[in-house]
Length: 459
Image (cartoon, rainbow, N blue to C red; front, side, top):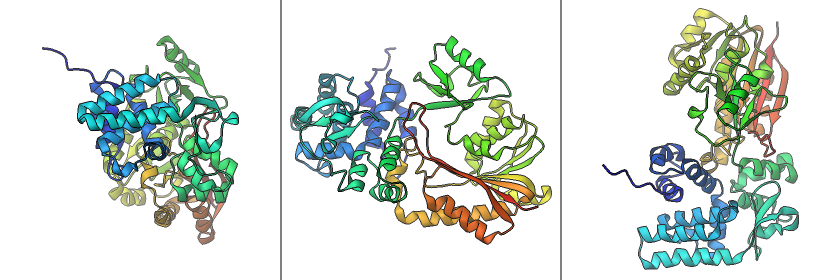
């Protein structure tokens, strides 16, 4: 029996983008079903998410240099062009002829001569206007350069971006493909320079970090295990985390099935670190799924604390148990959300409640690409109200002297310090112990953004 014909990464990426609806589904599951059609799995993944992360900027280039608004281009042709422009602009190491030629061939496979000629003409026109596929930003004109990294960009021969001095929100929104209202909020809160860095980090290809399971291994041992399998990795200074540099499926990394590590961004690890849980504590994790922080609690307390985990999403709650089993953790017990009140009444109050609330995800846009398409300014008030209700619920379960660890993966004040401030105003038996806001970073050891507050109940 003849083997199935293998598709290129670009062809598979185009299939994914054709099926993806930013308002209704997620690119990851669609990609997962199609990845076996190509031998270039990592490249296909990079193209899909790179094209989605930069879609506003790509569409700006296409509209500017094709003379046709993207809304007037058929979706299948548009996605072929988007992929090609993504590689031309953001993958300067990829040969130009390879990008253009395959885009033309992919257009020929789905359309006639007219469509093929159109794709060819658009891409030839764009390449003629690119003066440097990679240039140092300090030598480039900001209105004609799309940013690739903190140091480099792709420069065109005419100004097509808003003036960053006069139209800060418009410039950052288009250059980094982020909602304008969100960028405006950040500018009001953080100023231009810091907002620029947040936008850059929110648009980055995020690094992969793993947390060694200290119940089974140590950082030096896990690093050595990776090196033995030719996995490039390095320890993060001052953190119990390892950055994995070799592109590979997580489940295929040595030690995954044996529970030697958990994938976790360095910013999300801070909640449990700041909470400083003790081995004799009774802890309630109210929004536990998929269990990354729950298992971190167990590992940090030497698997000796009593940890009750629940989540309103019953399907995702199963992931907590699966992760606990894989990691060999025994101190976690999952309880359905419908039964948690009954269970809490039976158990009584807790030494600590971990409350990792649902949020807008504005600190993790690099990982949750779809969120940037779905975020609505008017939804923020409702999100904050829901967070406040969960915080009030958590307060009923904490004993005198106990703590609530409130965390989000948002960097919006309305979801973070405002929620905590209003809670403390209404609950005088609690006080703020500490809080930290972590902004996204695109530095060598990159990270997502988030917020953590520890509030303590008076004795």
